[in-house]
Image 1 (cartoon, rainbow, N blue to C red):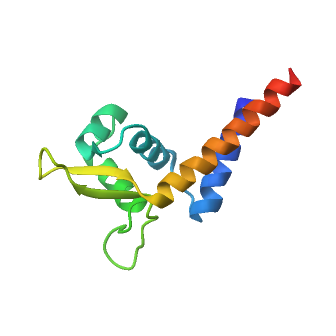
Image 2 (tube, rainbow, N blue to C red):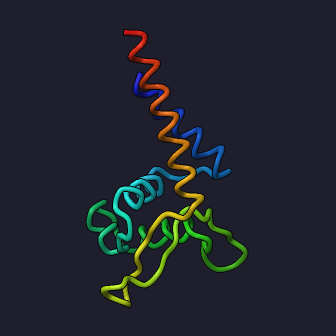
Length: 118
């Protein structure tokens, strides 16, 4: 059942990141995975979110989560966009790629199991 797969994916994210990520942050991570080098402006536009919400999500998903002792999850990198230096582009880190590979393997396994049941 699809709900079980979604719950499994959320469990993987929580286990691997040791964090309870909001769904909006997961959407940002998945969009970055599907569109490498996407800018924060494009993320906001494509996900229908504010620039501030995208900025907060990207900070938490990157190494630096903000002022103070907060540490990000190191799943993405943020760097100046090559076409517009004032904009930040985002891409997955090796840790981000690893997490997405674990999720993809889980989904493939569950899909195969469901096909066998039919």
